[in-house]
Length: 397
Image 1: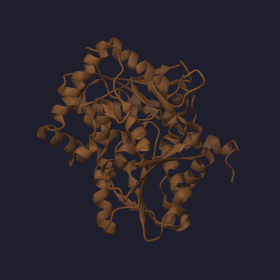
Image 2: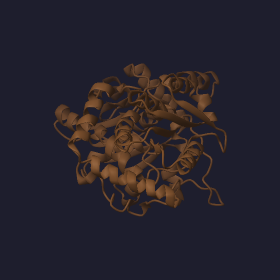
Image 3: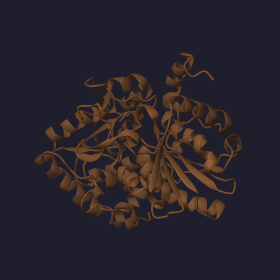
């Protein structure tokens, strides 16, 4: 893997501008310091990198294609649209990139018990998959509302040998699952590795997740140069916590000619409406109510139900390097149907938001330009939920 300093700005302090840091109990900080030390050691270790790359190739199935979406390009007008196909990874999403890296860290640190949070279930499935491969105990925390919407992924995790723990507190969604997972880590800090799935949390998690997810833009940058002979005009990616987006952006951050465009659900628009606050042990933009508490969120995509965002995304917005736009659930559903019918690719509802962003903003670009949109996951997990939504009549065109 080709990793440069541009991928790890400010990791020595754990901050990205005003955002990031680590605000956790002392016992947990000791564990995070050990994790930081291990990460800094092994990310430079040739044997570690070799094993990670081998697993990506032989187990995950990388590298995955950069697909020219000819019919979508014709339908939407404007630039050539290329799809970075994270949906073709083993387990069906980008989440496995980070999981394969962190599971190797856990093994080298001698940990036998892995815990994780999940919203849409893709990170939970990826974690359960890696734990099965490595022979490690696996506990996945998931909100009861997300378990209802993502029943197929719950069953997949259980088939893979994981214990899925329902979280009924709060809204029963992703934030609540993170709350309980962090509580587990604090109680079992000596024996447990928390395999965090998004680019959030206290230092060093945002930097770890970015490092392993940067394989997305490492590949896409090389692929677009091979296909077009020049960099894309823009890279689009959906933003919830922000892991697929930071991976999609990483190798373009220091390419000022490339626009970085994150797409959020209008119903949970942290970047548009959030204010700086501390959440889950780090500072970032957070949706807050009048008392300063995190605002309950809702999105038709379970993986986007989070009131905060990764600290580097907050920094990219504040610095002006990236822009963040919103799309409605109706726009996301229309894009879900577009990609399915025009390209034969059924995307995750999360990914459909990124496609909706392309549809909404394609007019900003010329036919001579190209853009990349990351299809962060496949839609198998969402088909039953989409059917319910369509049968409700709310999304009739």
